[in-house]
Length: 524
Image 1 (cartoon, one colour):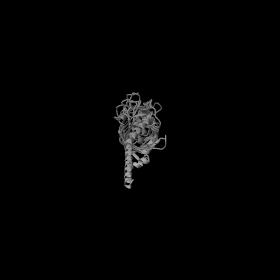
Image 2 (cartoon, one colour):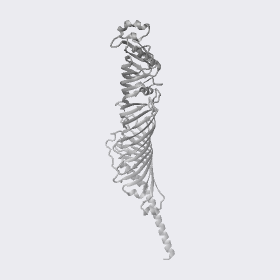
Image 3 (cartoon, one colour):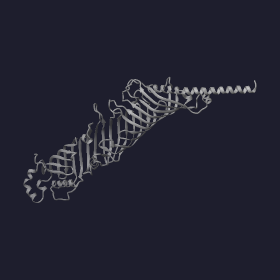
Image 4 (cartoon, helix red, strand yellow):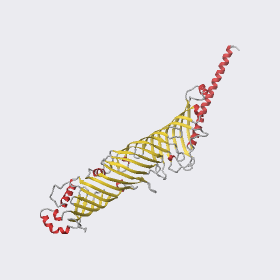
């Protein structure tokens, strides 16, 4: 055979071989896409024990030579996979919404590793994911399928990065709105086989609205009941606007840690509201707390273990919960407050408009209940407790002048102006209902005088209606000067009773700003 024929034969052989390579590579390319699709659907179906719907999936091979693709059996060649319209729906409970729905996803996989076990994917990117967590116990009968091993082969994902994720914790009661969390960014990173995933998340809290930065451990995923999926970590909660709630306002900042599951979390930490205020009064008083709470994601109930708080300079503790009772559509706030030595000015500054009218030390023990009614917080607030004020002094001159005058007369020195700005003590038991404080007992004492009262104070109108007794150390004649002193000496015995030099039935009316003291002639 001549040299020319050899060259021609070689060229034809090379061309046929090259064509064969391209044909083989083309066949591989066309087979990768349905193969990857089938394997992805099979793995998801097995791993999450769910029916899988996938609207679209496309595979793009990177630039590589057919020879290298065949020679290396795909090793080192990355296939870029993109998909959309992914839905995972429970197999058994068809009445439940999809556990997962996903707008778009993408990942890269080594072609040669498609036949390995486990298959390894370095990073999966998700966008527009919605997670619906059924209430606890609502997925009975569903069983997880382990790690997804078996005929579909195991898959190990090193890292998942998700944007625009919505987490919905579904309620048990029909018609009740789910608890929704918008997660702007979520990073999940594998730290080992069968181990929890490390995560970092940035999410928007629904109530009160604010930004939460969190990191910790998530999983392993519980396919039988996603709400039981373990979760723990630390968080910072910034710029939460309390103004969304009725009755209160301020910007909350909080840090802490938590542990539990998607459906029930125990959290502990501290919170600060530098500008805390009641909307009715508008006065800003700094509030800080350290807390431990149990939050039930299924029904939104919150149980408070004793919360230690500081309002201004006043320390107090609170326990109780925010609970929705059976048959109710809204939750009841039920708390117990203990304040052993509070600052009266802090409390009054928070509770009332304008500057405080009294200083002193307040000891308070009370139950607080806000039932799920349609009125404002102030209208439905229910209090029941006891209090005591020590070393009280009225800061409004008109009121303090009356107290000073009472003390002078009670000590038998009505003209002694050196007796001024005297301290007062007060204690009592009370009940607040429908904006009216009813005092079952109320006693007030200042040097030389003791007042015992019972009655009501209307928070809306600020009207006072009290009746009781006044006991003075001095005799009635000693409370007066000049001719009145001498004129009253003969009647001293008639007013000296019950161990007091002077004993009178009295009443207090008017308003808190301008009280009206007088004798109660209609009572014995």
